[in-house]
Length: 189
Image 1 (cartoon, rainbow, N blue to C red):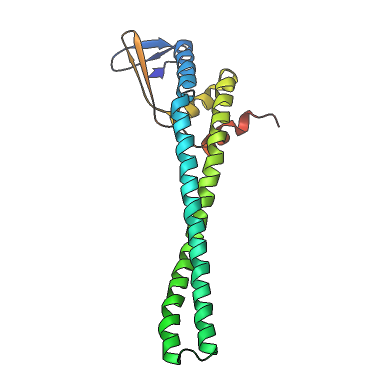
Image 2 (image 1 turned 180 degrees about the horizontal axis):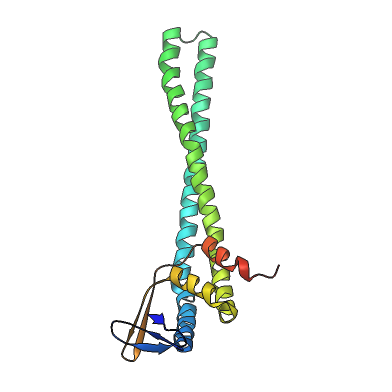
């Protein structure tokens, strides 16, 4: 749909459906509030994020304990060798697999730490999303048309205007980064 020069309405070139700009904007504003104000969906998202963070944190703790355990085993093996309770060949047979396991665990550790950090940031971002979404809704009426258009294009998959009904399909919840980026120009300097 397009707005013809000097016209106060959106017009579809194919089907000739028309809707006043102010009506579509008011309907979109209300639908946006409904989209962001789905407490069950938001609660489920936050609960899932918290559960994932708890699980990954527990996995990281287990991983760190495993590293410590392998180090202790390696130390004990070394002590046995120093006290001549095992031969050089015995030492090598016990120490080499432990050393390999330690290297594997240490290689995996930064990845697990990064995953936990990422989940922590995302958990904080979920709270930011709720704040920014409410802020976006409140500031919507005062935004310039071009800003509204960009936000609508990033939020909406499609809008179908039929006889007496309008169907707005939102694509997804934007990240807090997207919402913050959209609002940077709206905050007073």
